[in-house]
Length: 224
Image (cartoon, rainbow, N blue to C red; front, side):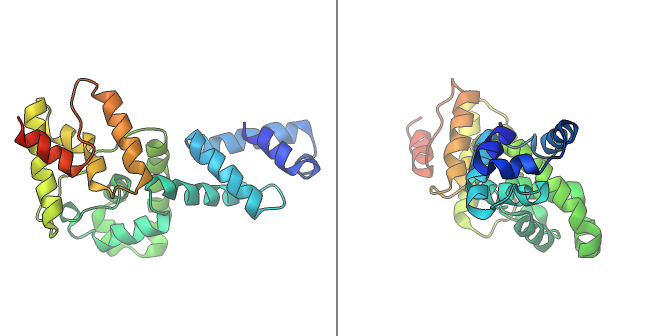
């Protein structure tokens, strides 16, 4: 799909980028390996952005940058933002309300101790690779579990964790599974990822009554 769109967008410029059919086959294989994990919606958005940004076919590195920008519309911070957040809260990762579960898991996989002690030159490339892989999983539809934060300073967040635990009891679900299923309630309502996660949870739990908002959750708990 990608190369067909490139051919339409860039015409003879696309054809001139490859000297032989063999070179085109090798290029397709490399592109497929590099971007294979991204959701089709993100690829389409990146293609539209490429038309506005490049007059020639972008390189793989340039297109990956476009994909990273587009994935922000799904609620995922950039790799740089994720790295900054992970380093800042590496000392107490379970007490922070993470902007996205992918940031937490990238930090955990990279190592909280390493994020606190290693230089950026040492740890940043490893963290970026881990985070991009996690983003690809999220964009492919996977829901990463979010840790239950302890001692959050925000009362509303603390209250939400308790309400979700009560909902878990009603639905006869494990607490951790319920926290993951209703993770979308932690996101602001204007975040496009919130609607997507709600739809995924509804598909996964068709027999459970899922709240769309915190108000709905409170109402469900009060009436049962």
